[in-house]
Length: 104
Image 1 (tube, one colour):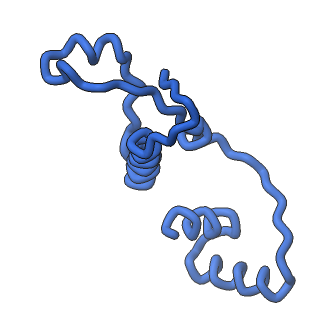
Image 2 (cartoon, rainbow, N blue to C red; image 1 turned 45 degrees about the horizontal axis):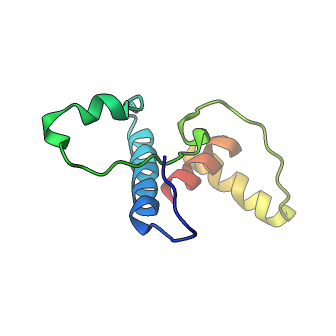
């Protein structure tokens, strides 16, 4: 837990961004995401003696592979191009959009 008087802590923001990027990279590579660690357990380790600790909140949606239906609005000409490119790639529309988003 962190507390401050309206001051910004870029190190904490950078840590959060780094963690989120690591999670996204691991998911893209098909790697397992380790479970969160207990600060109390980590503080007991000799390697971490004297370190400063903080808690960052990570969006749980980053860890979910649950399928969610979404509706989007596109011009027909864009949708036709999207479907044609998906067909060439051997994918359905949803898979093609997902691969585009992951590789962007």
